[in-house]
Amino acid sequence: MQIKSAKELVVYQKAYRVAMAIFEMSRSFPPEERYALTSQIRRSSRSVCLNLREAWAKRRYEAHFVSKLTDCDGENSETDSSLDFAHDCGYITATQHAEMVTLCQEIGKMLGAMINNPTPFLIAHRTPPPSGL
Image (cartoon, rainbow, N blue to C red; front, top):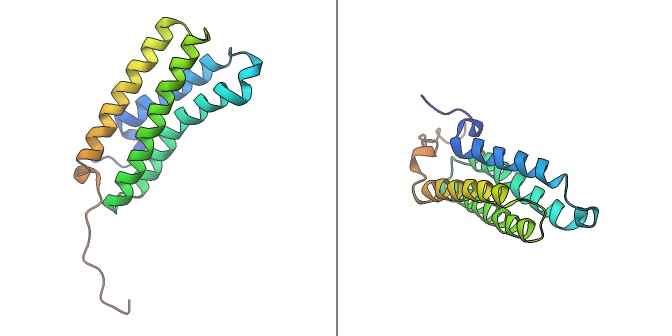
């Protein structure tokens, strides 16, 4: 089965699940965190999916694809760090933290595998058309 959309990738589905779980968890963060941790963790968790969609759109060019995947990995790492802050500030439980960190680690491994071996995801290069077309 050929994957036609980034949404079909397991890594995308896991990242989306993390972003939505973080959205729900962060609803209970204190108001003083609205423009700090709440905004930051929501932004970084969503950016994993958004950058993955951009990477998918750029898979005709290996360097662009890998660059966007690297951005995904960076945002995933940022989300992981924000989860540590959320836990240590008492905004999420140890169980929530452990579940989300485990998912972030899984996402990181999957992104790392794609970065290290992008070829299966790339669009095959076609012979360019004759000049003048």
